[in-house]
Length: 622
Image (cartoon, rainbow, N blue to C red; front, side, top):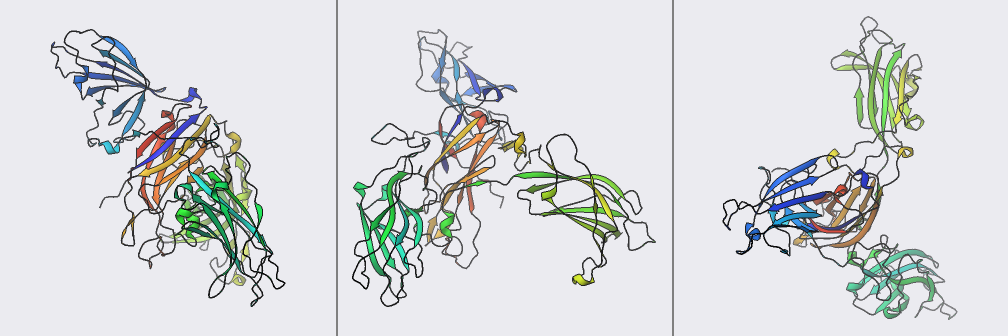
């Protein structure tokens, strides 16, 4: 299984990182004087800004270095842009056992013949760790050759900024609204909807009850590669109990449909008179429908929201799960709570030395202080607690003061409910001011009847609460972090560049479920970098889906990682279990097919990388 991805970095600050340089020296060591010596080696120095590293590599084909019988001259030559397929670990910050494929910017070779040139790089193998298995060709990074950024036949202008994916042409039909539709003579009303038909493909809008001037504003997309007709038909129908009644239609010749090239403005919709329209009681045929029909690509703004003909089998809520989407993760904040002290607590048993503790809860996060060392009615703790909260701050910070009466029982002395919207934000090293808060104490704290509760403000607690905006909330593994910016936007630096990623497709996917007695996979791809998540549309029933969607991110730190994962969509509806045969089961979670990670520090600026990455999935042991 593999996924094909193109990447490019623009305007990256090279002073903070940048491309890595691999310098190799290849020597034909023939100490014995024989031509068949196999003691050839390669010395590799891998230079990074922080550490130099060197390796000694063994050449798998030493015959490529053997000198001709008549010449034993040695000369250094430079080969640029040669690839060295390697196994093992080249980069210290990568995981052991992962396959690498590095670009050689400069290779110094010591060869026996003047003017000797090799059509390809000399194959070498980096000794892998003892725990890793021999590398397989199917699990190596492969460079692919694709037709990216195709241009329109009548011009030299690229299609928008979609130059990292293959161009896909679509016929778009936007059904906006209709007016003055004739009513049924029997019922005196009309329940209109629209059928958009192109060959064997048919898309249907929602219907309105008893409305002669409906508004739909729905978009339909038909892939040009699957067009089986030269005529587009738009039918207007009246939904009836027994059989839907035909009202009229509008016909378009595809040879006359205009072509739109973004960033041109969207094509304006026009009014079209409906042909063969049912006549009204006065014998006149009225009724018009507003439509916009054009040829475009996946760069069109209507592409994400459009109904796609290749997903016509999806019904109900499953339609929303097959569309491409862009998400932004909620901003996370650290909440620092310092529990300093409390005053005038009233224990239930005055004859026993109290053991007061403070417990704070925020959602599912619960932290508790130690027992106060001062066994008095005014305990002191002076302890810090850190929580994580997401915007918008809908959860409440709940503090309770408890008295430990036994090893299995704590009595609640008071409670404080603090909304996070009123908490002060801290952006520098200066601490926020502490405050005293009154505690709510109930005679029967868990008493269900509010009329029997006794509300007093006899006790109070001393707290210092702040939202820490100068830190980055670590919600990812440090090895594969994609964002290091602080939470507060005021502290962000200017971006060093932009990352453009084109998700072209996948190949060799395995069946993830059973449909109609055979294996099936409904795959989509998710890419996550920084706070932005993107999700491609779902390609139904395909082991080699082609998405060809392009996305862009701002880069603030080149020493970060973008993660891409391929999933099987299990929420297509229609069967109760996402498309499986067992319709009595609840919908399952989307199945993980595999994922890849790309380090931005290994990418050069203004260079397009087109690679086929092997999908890696970690399964739990049996």
